[in-house]
Image: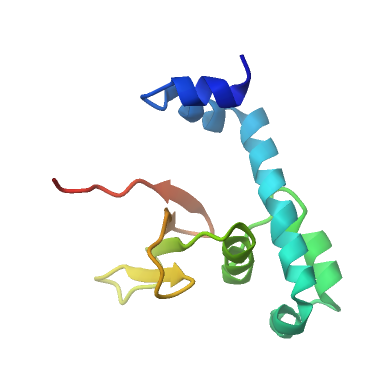
Amino acid sequence: MCVLEQCEDDEQGDTLLQLFNDPTPSDNLLQYLRLPTSAYLQNHSDFFSHFVELPCLEVYCAQEVETMAMECDHLDILALSEALGVSIHIVSVEGGDGERLAHHTIPEGVEPCLHLLYKTAHNDILYPHHCH
């Protein structure tokens, strides 16, 4: 049974949780997500090149986006959001005024399907609590 079939048959989501906590499939998934991010950045270089300090966007993508263990920034999350056609909500612990959290939705004005908690140069997945 392939991984996709295992996840589809698992109503509790334990299979997916186990895969994400195992470094090998988790790293493979992250590496996969880096590639469409890099491709989107480079295919839209007219817009994104203005935000990169390295010599050029290709160098930025090779060194910062495609390389594992490198942190992603707002620019990369924007490109990933656009590449996958999803909206991402980021709650930042560090971006508030000390008493409140800062909220960012990329792109703005769209209902997000992925929620992340940003803290100390790291993003964690948040699962929203829906009141019934």
